Length: 224
Image (tube, rainbow, N blue to C red; front, side):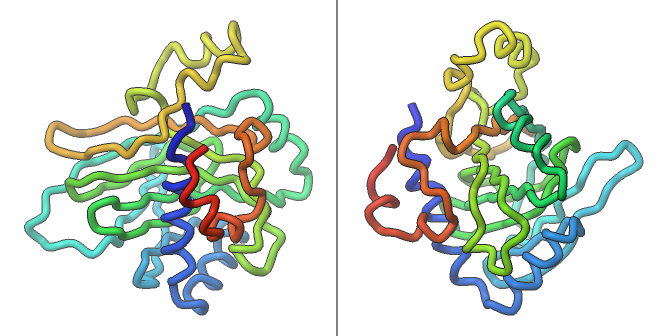
């Protein structure tokens, strides 16, 4: 069911490690301070904006031709009880939520900080993308040394599902049925609606607990 999660996140983390140290350190400091930074593979740094409705707009810094066609992606988060319990233990506000968008065609990367309780929006050129959420320990000095508490994976069919919450309340052990880590093809006909289901890492077999462990070749090449 979760085949491909290790490979997908591994690709993103590998690219993340190639961003200039100074730029990545600045991103991590700002993310830990809840400033909603965004960074791409070239080290370009920008910041998300909130509109009057509270929607967080993740400004897209992917390198793209002015002739590229874009589509809007509206995203939300679903936090099952184990993840909500993790966050409720966060008395010192020591956890941070990141969204990782990996371009399968361009092998590019967009990384941004989100709010757990706020929906978001971003625009992407047409292409194929992998989407992941990460809840990390914000107390480390180096992003790649951060502990992973939870991983967010796209909802099955990549659409917000109004029945998801009621289903989970009735069948909490079967939330995995809604998870689909496969890349999402963004073409015409948007906007798109993407629900990320946050899973406690203890629910994912053999999941590494540190970002740096995703760089280990054996895990990246061996799907879960």
